[in-house]
Amino acid sequence: MINNILEKVGNTPLISLKNQENPNLNVFAKLEFYNPTGSVKDRAASYIINTLLSRGIINNKTTIIESSSGNFGIALSAYAKQKGLKFICVIDNTTLPVNEMMIRLQGAEVIKITEPDSRGGYLLNRIKKVKEIVESTDNIYWVNQYGNPLNAQAYYNSLGNEICLETPRQKLDYLFMGVSSGGTITGVSQKVKEKYPKAEVIAVDVDGSIIFGGKSRKRFIPGIGSSLRPDILQSAKIDDVIYIDEIETINSCIELLEKHNIYAGGSSGSVHAAVHKYFKKHQMDRSVNVMCVFADKGERYISTIYNPEWREMVESFNLALV
Ligand SMILES: Cc1ncc(COP(=O)(O)O)c(C=O)c1O
Image (cartoon, rainbow, N blue to C red; front, side, top):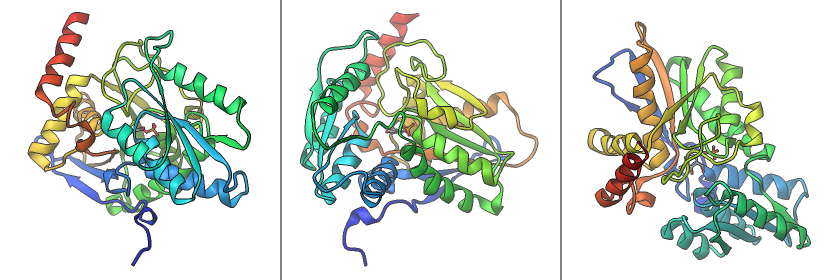
């Protein structure tokens, strides 16, 4: 018996994804959308808020602020509300209405950035706004997922641990994870390399993201990729990076639904596509255990990834670039 659903963070299901084309690949996915607010970000939001309160870094009068266009904003608004803390979430024009609604419904103050920044996105202007508010407000704490070590620690202690313990026959050969703020892969890769030093950690990024030195261009799917290189990644243990384009992501989401009954969010599709792409290039003549993280669910993408008209829009945009 639990008193509040928010206590049920972590211990998400691990599912085996049978791969008929390549019997040497034992692919497993952690279904992070089973977390209380629907994504992997519950782990960071609950850990960060609890740690800050228990260390006395914040108190019950502190305002929490963060720039997030989706899952982290939803998770922080829930855990801040549970602790009676005021939360300001800085979002932008591209935030999906369903995400904005969830953030508002959970009591957060929402500030929406409508002016694009020098790179054509909104992230730099969102962060500028956060800094302005922090400078002019007393007793305020900026979570700063791109640089706060607590973000990586959250995943080191929870998701990283679960992945290490749950990998079948205590054998972990590959780990595939999507990257945006970098917190998840930083914490999980540190834990995994301690327990399985030979495991290969593959970061999954999308075309148009600059995280690993790619060329910046417009991206449509939130939750993966970024228009800045997060500081937190300096302590990540990454062996390789694989790029996926947004059409591959969409196709892969549809495939997950058709073949495995998994109604997954965008970054899960990117990760699944990356596994296929990677092992097409690197043929395995031995059996390998491949762990993946599926960060959120398809519902948040019903008007985008799962909408054929939206897909056509992304396809025409990509064609115009060629
Ligand atoms: C759907 C989804 N996948 C993956 C990630 C990547 O996690 P991180 O920001 O820790 O790199 C996020 C982060 O927001 C996300 O929302």
